[in-house]
Length: 157
Image (cartoon, rainbow, N blue to C red; front, side):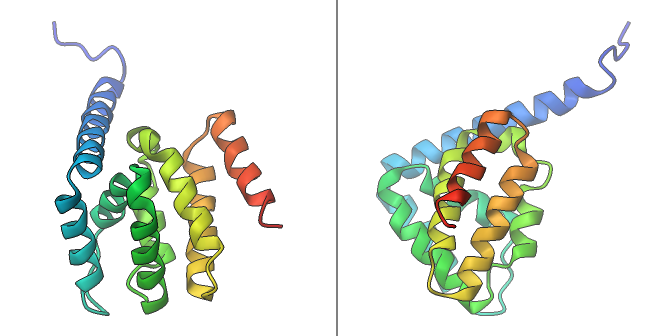
């Protein structure tokens, strides 16, 4: 009779599942199509200082970084955008907040990006790396994921 027996959670789960499928498709596309990855990186890199970067830019960079051969280029763009003020701690928090289930497939890539940012010689890059680690810890509640975040942070001490 159309009763919602799961308190609306079915719709949330469906949206999360759709986002997971979209992220997986984008990640595979960036892994296999270097022209797409290059175009994304160029567009984000060329957004002028003071230009608006939506949360989707963070998601797309994470998708691109899910392919190990793209990570050095993504880290470079992130560090550059951090030092120019194009990517802020607020943008990272807004991009990740409430999206843990959809971003689960990007957890490893996001941890690696946080590590690269935290190792940056630039203070803004290090701040962004710390924010990313904090957001990952807050957003991913599985003990193994939290343990990985803490273990990664310990290597920086």
